[in-house]
Structure formats: C-alpha cells, structure tokens
Length: 502
Image (cartoon, rainbow, N blue to C red; front, side):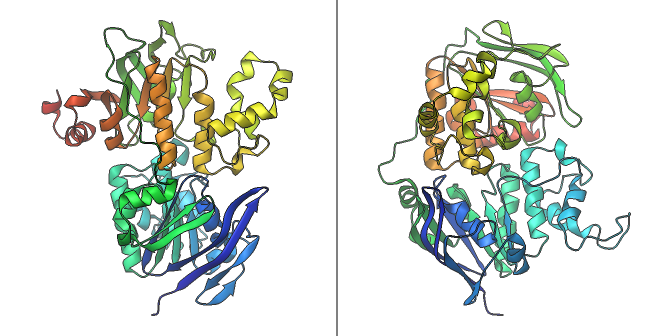
C-alpha cells in the first residue's frame, strides 16, 4: 500500500498583530516520525492545530495525497484519520479511566454491562502504556502523568493514521516515556505517521527520523534527523550564542534550617503521606524524586499550605504555614508552582492581567486591583516571556509553555522564603528552561529554600543539593549530590535494595 503524504503549503495564521505561522510549508509522510521543534511561541502547536482543524488558517492549503482538504473542525480531520493529543487534558475528572476511554471511543458498546462485546477493547492500548493503572480509578484521583497516558490512549484507540502528539513526554516518568517510545516506533513500523511536538532532544533521538524546526512563526529547517547535531538543533531553535545554562549556588551551611517539616501527615482518597520530616537550609535546593502516585501531589500541597494536615507541622522562618486546623493566611512567604497550572494556578476565563495579580487580591482593594496600569502589566508579562504579552488576552488561550511562564512570573515575583516547585519546566523549551533555572538559582542566592518535585533524574542529579526519594508516602532515603547517582536513586524509588539504602 503506497504511503500517504500530507502537505501543508504556505500556512499563515495571525492572532491580532502576532503572526503565529508565517508562510509555513511542511510535509508529513506515513511510516515516519517527524519531530517538530522550537521555542514556546514559535508556532508549532498552532501549525498542528491547523492540520487538526481546531484553528482555521488565514491563508495556505492542506493536501492529502495531492488532494486539497478543508477542515471546518476536528471532526473533519478525524474523518480522514488525523488525531491529536493536546497538552491540556480533555478528560472528565468525575468518571473512571474506563469511562473516559469509552466516552471517546466510536466503537463503545451501547449497553455497557460486564461482559458486553468490545467493552475491554478500549483498554488494550492503555494496558501497554500503563500496565499498572487501574481502569476503575477516578481520573480526579490520578497524577498528571497518568492522565497524559489516558489522553494518548484515547487518540490511539481511534485508529488514526496520522497522530499528532503535543509535548507527550513532558510529564511522564522514565519508564512511561520508554513505553511511549516503543509504541511510537511500532506505529511508524506499521505505516502510520507520527508528529511529535517537543522540546526534548531525547525524544528526537529516540523516535524521529525527520526533524523540522520553527522559530518565531517561520520554518527554519526541515530534513533528516541524522543531518543535524544536537548543538545545531539547539542553535536553530534559540539562535547561536544563546545564554548558557545557569549553575546553582554551592551547597549552603545546613547548621541553620529555614524550613522545618516535622512528622507531616496528609491524605486524599487515593494518596497519603505520613511521618515526613525534613529540614531545608537557606539557599538550599532539595529535590523530591519518586515514581508517580507515591504522594507527591498531596505532599506538595501540604507544604504550600493548600491541603489540611492530619499530623505534624510545617514552619518557615519559625512561623507555621500549615493548614491545621485552619488554612494559613497567604502572606507571600510561600510560592507554589503546581503540576497542573490550568487546573490549580489560574482561572482560564479571566485575562492575563487578573491572573498575574492573583497573589495581590488580599493586599489590595478591588478598585486598585482593576486599575493597575496596562503598561506595568505588559512589562511584567514581557519579563516572564509570556507570548503574546497582552494583559487583556484570555488565559485559557495560552499554550502550555506560556501558561507555565505566566504562573512562574507571578509566583516568583517578590521574595518568597519557600518555593514549592512541581515540575517547573514542564512544557518549556530549552531557552525558557534555562531562564527558569536562572530565576530559581537567583532566589537560592538570596537565601530562599526550594523544594523541587521532579521526575527528571538527570536534572535533580545536576542541580539539587540533596535528593529525597518519596516511596509509598514516606521518605525512603536522602542523598547529598556528591553521594547520588542514577542507579542509587532508582533503587530507592523502587525499593530494589533497601539494605544498601539504609
């Protein structure tokens, strides 16, 4: 069967004065994986949303096997075998995993009773991606990485011939990422076309035989992946001579603790942590590693004073910031970067100006809140590198990376004593990631304490002064940077060798 060729010719799409796609032409072939690289705001997601029918181009054409197509919406694109997995999830939190998959499946049986034909077929792909995920679990109780896997399974269940993945590995664990790589390579071998929007060069090396790079709405390069070195890809994305990655300050004096956690306990319906005791010095970055679902979410929210404790306390500079028995009054002492900013950090239906000032609500009157100068807010958005920096723009229209930068710009303003950061570079490109690191390290240099939740072991090993491993809701072990390696941390995460970790 001859391969299918999709051609995007001269695609241009504007949002007001911003040209998101500027006369972009690109080809997508069956039996191939195309990595689409570029900074946040480069136009990658916009281009693929045009192909998926979610956005209409101002000009340009879409051709499939030489025949021109006009997609009035995603249904038209899905009808010809094009599916897309977005960064922002479209799951129903109150339903179970199985129910969400059935809701999205055109082959779901009308009568959904145990034993009904086809009832379990929707779980086949998910069982390969996440064999330990219980299909009876409520989506509301799952970690962000688990939700991403359900979104992937939804689209793959549609038997799409062209699959677009928008930052698919940004919140997956190493094991989940490797399973996804295997599935992508299987789909390519089966003749499907995969487009992977990503900022991770590891994704490119693992899956992509072709690479396209965009910068500021224009296509900079397209060709075989083997023709470009890693450094050439970085230079094409962000420009040669870009600032080098920052380095964290040296390890602090731990004789003084700025943050003290004593026998902390907290729980939700599906997660709990107990007996958590930690001390974090001024200027120290403490990394928290662990497999998804071991209590990271409830621990982070408990540390930030956003979830009630069942035991223990959290103090910053000797003052309790814990929710026990009542929630603490926000005073700027603690900054929180959540793992799902669209759900937990912003109001999507409000504009950027309102969301940027959320932390000021208690300290200013409503009149002051609404009258803050647009020029001042534009400067703050530009400083946070939010694109476009338009205070009146609705927050729900931002890409995942720009949404993350908005939250970072708000939370890191001022001088918080404790920064609880959950995957702070999720969905960010190389340049933006470096900027986030420099911001965090600047706060370390002035004496802030940072507790950094991450599943990127390489980043934790490079930047964290110490790494604590969370397993089954408890601290399985803590390692100094000079004592830690990937294998040892992996042992603690999976409890392969508790005797050695003692």
